Image (cartoon, helix red, strand yellow):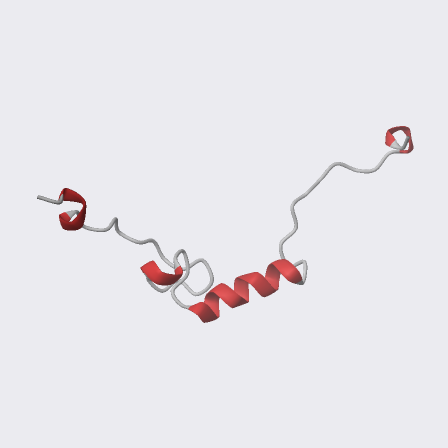
Length: 60
């Protein structure tokens, strides 16, 4: 009677760090190790989101 309990989980994609199949517990990563590697890259400025350049006209 509970349709959600019978519904299969959606297929997982691959881990963005190592390419192995992702696990539901640590998705989108395959393990806590890959999750920590990704966090470290963010904390060490390994990933950068480009912004606009600073101009003197913008400073108030």
